[in-house]
Image 1: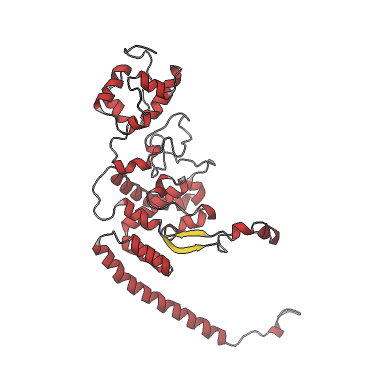
Image 2: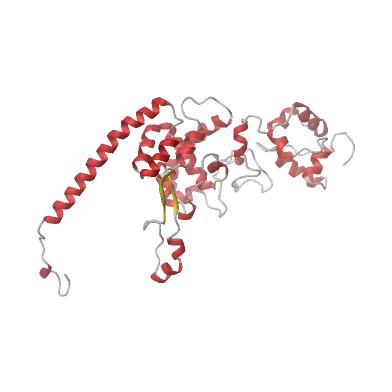
Length: 339
């Protein structure tokens, strides 16, 4: 393909298709690599992912002249609507596949970690094993969580587009969700699979591996129940979304939605579940929050802590009273040889 005229064959962009996907579909038709195809468009030395992030008017006009597509159509395949802080979140291909989309088609929405349904077909994305989130959580539980996920996605989308956020910015919420509220500990009994004594000896290293304990499991206990024990921890801050799995990103988005809806309640819930060191880390994580929120948290946490101590004292007293009661059925009244 030589010259500067219009290309004889040009594929029309699919709905919500990204520029890198369109170029990757066009290049094989002309027996070129993507970089060679970009050079043939008159943009030699430019990386397609850089063009996809920010395509200047001149570059867009140049591609439009070679392809016959409008400059607006070229710009629509870029991420120009997102702010610079959100570039970390954009994957180079679909994060999770849609069962109805072609494998070589990559859409803009599927590159963002807070999208869990195909924008075109409306079906759930699947993870690497082919499992959907409703398969993992159960249909009823997933339906309840999806409302919080939509609220979290709207908040994250507004942050990515640079829209002003009245109270909490997305990075501040993610810092709390990924804070270590307790010291690392091996899997507890509820987290361990049922094993024979021989298997427990064989998998001793697994059963004694310390697992990071993060506030995410307090804010989204449903995630704590279904996530594989070794895959529960997420990376800190924004990297948790940028590099998380489909399940992890969904849990984080649900967590963002819940905290945005009631930040004081969830901050107190995390602090009540924290140990001494974790309490300090959670306090540090919420330190960038607005002063009014921090004052509300401090006032309500003192009352919640007092009520929790009173509840524990009452339970302890009840157990002690129960232990002093006489047994109504003596051992000799049980069946023979059973005491």
